Image 1 (spheres, rainbow, N blue to C red):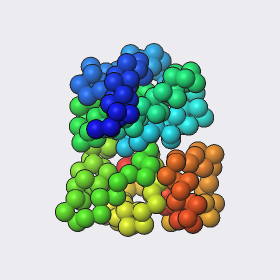
Image 2 (tube, rainbow, N blue to C red; image 1 turned 90 degrees about the vertical axis):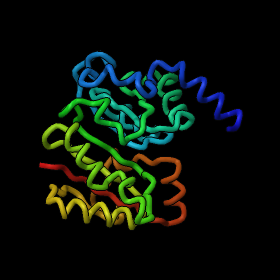
Image 3 (cartoon, rainbow, N blue to C red; image 1 turned 180 degrees about the horizontal axis):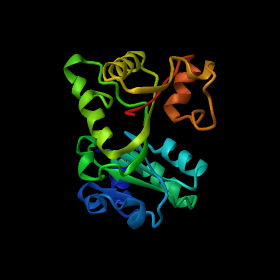
Image 4 (cartoon, rainbow, N blue to C red; image 1 turned 60 degrees about the vertical axis):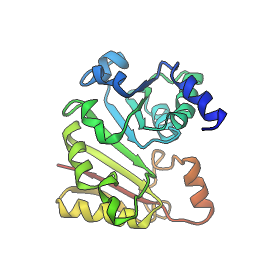
Length: 216
């Protein structure tokens, strides 16, 4: 492991807006009141990477609470450091494996979920690792409030098609569906937030897929 990664791992452990592994379990069902000290809606970004989307969402919506989730602490470091430096208090980060998410959030505790440019896990043998596979969708259904939406942005056309297929197989409520977001009618200030990698994709004229759906 490089020196920069080791330094970031050590530094992120001192950040008040980051909880690692089991440290987040006592907050199950209590995130809004005990971590954010308010009763505002709670929004998750899964596989948040550097936390760019999480931080930008928190800036746009100061009346909501945002938690970026990723397992790699050296990635979370960037978003957490930015939030601390800019005094953004409605954002936090949780370093866990997303497979364990039910251990950290209570039934119906979450208002909305964002999944932005996750690993598409293209091999058929890794379908269960895809963040929109049935086993993950079942977890989201548990922690989301009734009507809570799931948003997916991805550059991977196959992953987009796979997710759309699962949404239809399970008769979920599909709100928005486009294979080329920036050429569609759906672009808003929220959807126009761009991560570092998304800017690279767009520079190379790659289309961006977007889905918004809910369980009811």
